[in-house]
Length: 90
Image (cartoon, rainbow, N blue to C red; front, side):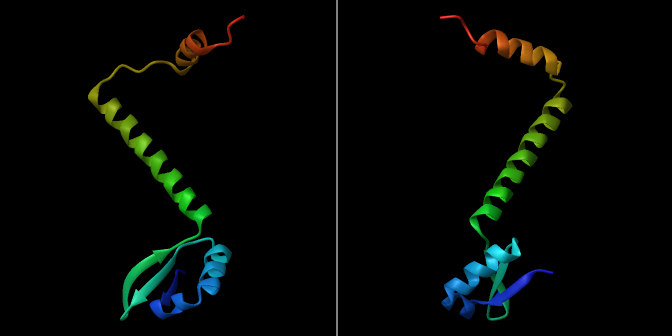
């Protein structure tokens, strides 16, 4: 169940910070009974951003697949990368 707090609760920043960290989910802030803000801890924010990046990469891969771009086998990709960036004797 989402945590919903009135904007006046932002006066007690320590309580809101502790709530964000303990709940491990966004806190919804209302103003005059309507949604206004969303507050979350940095670790939760970073997790959300990482998840969005994964979804974006999946979307890009699906679009490439639909456009008919030729796929390269994963083993072939790693072989090419090792050839290009592999350790070289000094």
